[in-house]
Image (cartoon, rainbow, N blue to C red; front, side, top):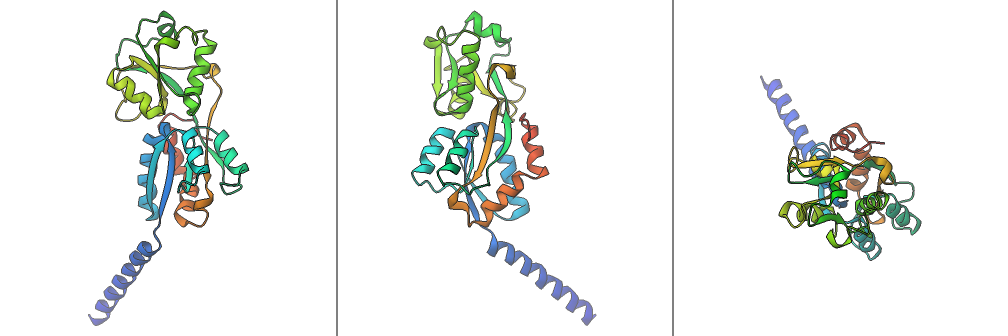
Length: 254
């Protein structure tokens, strides 16, 4: 009986020690996430926190603005961009850990409307039976640049100028459509597959030959080089659990 009690006490002490160690060594990581990737990243962050004990502080926005903020000393430690250009620039400028950059997803562009009968393909854009179409700012948001490429290839860019409503990022662009300020607009497939919009409205999955591949790169920023949580998140993103979540949101996984 005494031996049994000692065993139980030892196991209790061991478990308490392991829990204490988990708390002591747990860190927080500051992450800048492109707006299109936020729905998927919420699930990834939840899973990462569960298995690692670390916590994730997420800030959503446009990749172009994040790039400018990081250059100006923003405290981000990991950057999930909506393109591969800005992480590459940050690496060249010495603001991210060399060799840490990798493509975590390839995005898909969709034309979406709350109206289940409105979007029927490119003909919807050509007929122009709408007052406003929303896109993200092509200068700061890669999905906005992709939308611009689509409209140019379809010969519609100039003609639709009076009807364009431009969001700062994809989150704001989605807000324009959901609020009715635009009847339709270009979003990331991942946004439309999020529980908030899944199965609602009408959509056209834009053929990938109408825009350049939206390769989305992640980078470990210099401010996160010594943070175990930042390093652990980068490693987790390249593992099977994270990749499964990325694929579930309509991205192509590299």
